[in-house]
Length: 212
Image (cartoon, rainbow, N blue to C red; front, side):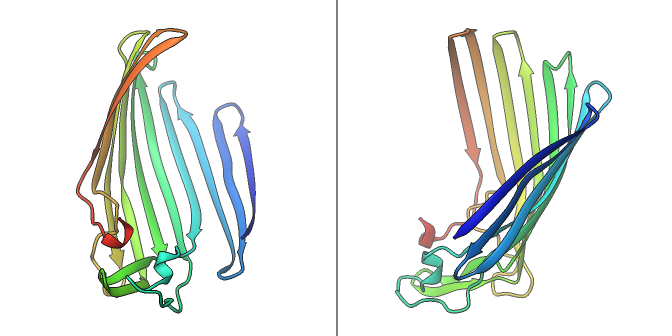
């Protein structure tokens, strides 16, 4: 695989920032050339509000195990690379001289030719699904309780399903929990010493023995 990456940043005045976060060209002997990119932008609205957005594309080659029938060694003919497009838009609101910051971001991702397992482990195989989508919200809060103590928490609410007319239509995408969250505390005792703790919650998700 050969590839190249370009990154750039442009500030419109001193307020709005537009970034070409990634422009990449990959050339695979098996799956051909793919160009992917990602652009982000952000601008303040007043002194305490900031809006953010991004849009981009991606692709993923089938993994080795996905090119074999479950439990066997016969290659699956016809698998092609997944392609996806993502956009997101969010807002960040600060209070009390940024000692309290709330954020919310909505995201939407669509997949074409997603590689998915059809059947049960030992009696099935991998195919390219027609379409799939993943959309939801990312919510966050950060509070500086003092100059030394910060607490933060975030949560992701996700709905990820197969679309189209394939055999997995309506089913949930693998390994994508409908709810994921974490909370953390950081205590900065001095310039050279700090303590932190973090708790993560992962909700129910669809699994497959092929990947575990």
